[in-house]
Every structure is written in C-alpha cells, then in structure tokens.
Length: 413
Image (cartoon, rainbow, N blue to C red; front, side, top):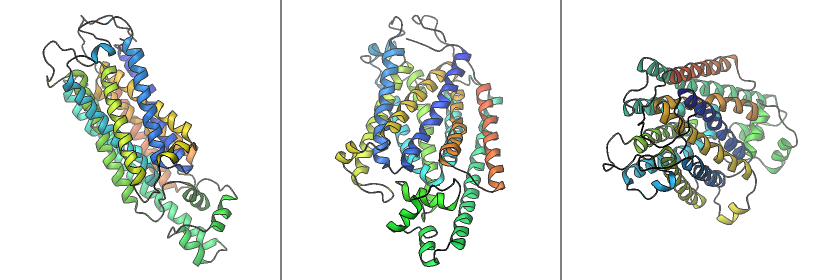
C-alpha cells in the first residue's frame, strides 16, 4: 500500500486537502442558492463522497505487496479488527451529521462565517484530543498558540456576521425608503419577508441586481430553496456550533481506529490502515446521510417543502455540482488522513483553514460582503489574518510518527 512518510509529503497532502475541503461547501451553497432542495443535494453528495473512498481504497490501498504486518485493503476486510472498525464508523456518523447541519447553516449565516466558526471549534476540540492521542509528537509550544489563534478567529467570525447583518438591514431599510413602491407592499416584502406576489417576483427577476445591493438580497431570497428572511440568525449560529462539535469528533475517532491507542485489538492483529479506516468511515457517513435525507424527504427541516424519490430522480438542477462536491470532499478527507498518519493528526487539523478558500469562493461566486461597511471589511480581514497565523502554527508544529521498520514495501512521497 502507498504510505506518506516524509514531512514534506504530509504537508503537500494537507495543502491539497485544504483546497478540496474549502471548495466543496461553495458548490453545495451554489446549488442551494439556485433553488435546489438540500435533501436532493446532500443525497447526491453522499453517493460520490463514498465513491471517492472506494476508489482510494482500491488503488492506493492495494499498491505494493501486502503482508500480515502491513495488509492491503482487501486483506483487512476479513481480519478481526471490529473495535477499530467501530471507531472509524462512529467517526463517519459524526462527520455526516456535522456536514448535514452545516449545509443548512450556510444558508443562514453565510459560507464564510459558518466555516470560520465551525472549523475553529473543530480545531480547538479535535487538535487538543489528537495531541494526547498521538503521544504528544507535535510541538506543544507552537501547536497550542495556534489553537488560541483559532479561538480568536471564531470570535471574530461571529462579530463579522453581526456586522454584516447590520449592514444588510441598513441596505434593506434604505431601499424601502427610496423605492417608489408604497410602504404597504415593499416593507412586508423586504423587512417582514412575506412571500412576494408573482408580479413582484417577475419585477425582481427581470433584471440582475448588483451584488451587495438590497435588490440582490431580495432576488437571492426569492430564488433560493432555504428561506432565511424573517428568521432569527440564532438558528444559523446554533446549527453552526452543533456542526462544529459533531465534526470535531471524527478526526480523534479516526486516529483511534488507525493507531489503537486504547489497545482494543487482539494481540497480533495489525492496525487498520488509513485506507481501510477511511472506507469504513465513509461507508457509515454514506448510510447515515441516506437515512437522514430520506427522513427529510417526508419530514423536512425549516419548513422546506416535502419531496419524493421520483422528484429527486427527476431533479437535475445542479446535480453535477452536487456530485462534484462529494468527490472533492471525499478526496479532501482522504488526503487529510494520509498526511495526518505521517505528521500527526493534531497538525493535520491545519486543513480546517478551509475558510480561507471558502471565503474566496463566497466573495467571488456569491457576492458576500459586497458593499458592506468599512467596519465589516476590517473585521473580515482580521479574521482571515488570524486564520493564516493559526494555520502556519499548526503546520510548524508537525511531528513525525515513528513507524515499524518491518512493514512491507511502501512508496515514499
């Protein structure tokens, strides 16, 4: 099997993972903003996310000769490693629930803020636990100041959201005051967020508003599948925090699955390889995603419309983007684990700097923060700078996991 053994190779894996994991949320957000139901989108995403894990396992997990000490992916499927398998599958459950909650949170508080807050929670909890599970192979004097920077970034992310929401309210109020429409028709549409009439919808859709304007916000609300106007942003923040807590558990559980720090395996049974553990994690992630979305077909969250399998199969609006998002997430997670197995899972949490990538896509694709106040811009820049410092600290803390020399032939990256 293919193993990453050098520190440079581990960092390369983490950087590529950072790009993939920062891009897939943007694709899911793009589909939601085009009006596709999140139940349909997440089901497509779950399919290709699992497919990516299967491809990785059957290729990288099968390269080279296998032995009892260093088995291939296929060989490990029949071994007595149930405790490690359960840890991996528990990680998949946590990851699936966290990503599912994040999909709804993005609609309420924006892609950038959601990822800043949730990823900071992931780093603070996941990195701390992994540091001790990895027998402190990372440099604590560098690692934990980096974790502190993530805490500051999470706080700044919340402040950025509050400031941007205040900016949007000012835009909407100014628009309603300057408009030629009467207060009886315009104010309910924008401020109270009552569904617009067909004539109003046609009026807004007949022209493409500039990003950051009040008309842009109204057009977006009319088009998207998750309606957020008139609802408390506390919903989005709660979803974000629960998402972060759930996702923070999957990396430590994966660490336990591959390194067996609690000695749950019988003597002589080899540890799960990264590829086998990732397969089991992705399998449970897939099944949980399917089960929850089937439930949401008939009992949707947040007053979304009900749907059916027939409607899902016939819904091709943005399906390609949803499928691509699953591929990117699958390969992104796989690369993160490959790097973490070599340099320590605490350091591999540096890929949680994905808000740097997500914010870029949020600004370019969705017009986030366009025409916002100077205060909001300054807070946003401060947040991203703090994230950059935190990422550098986590990467600089990378250690090197000592591996047994009697392992079978491996490829060095």
